[in-house]
Image (cartoon, rainbow, N blue to C red; front, side):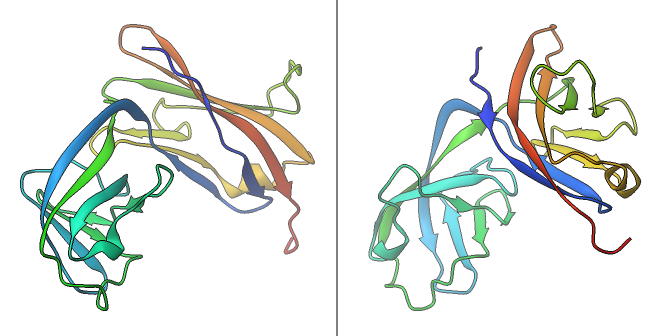
Length: 201
């Protein structure tokens, strides 16, 4: 498996706890049939079978008959699964009360999460790409700033407020790498970090 790193630019507020959560989608698509959609706020989708979508995962809805307002027509449109059971998905941001009645059909599609079991991770910040000085390093070792949650398919990075209060750069670059149990290294995310100066200090 080879991947192109996603580019995500971040902001750190000096003197505040920084926390960011990432998700790793595979290139494999999964498709699940819909059996019902509620007219409610929030909207609840019921699937014909177990859907296996984790909480906070993005997905698309297409080909619904009746409640056509819920259909997404372009590849860059997604809903977010706020809460899930084995065959329901709640979309907290969607109010479907005034939608047409659901009559039939519809498909949910999503990129299957990559299993994070036994992966390790490292995060580094530098002033620029050529700098040999590391401004901050986090790892997935216990209490070292990165938590890998394979159950919910989440990678969470935390920098405490004491550390961010000592930051004094206008901008920086960062990278997040994951290493598989077999030793394969994947550059998952890169980008820039802007430091927003603290007012209360």
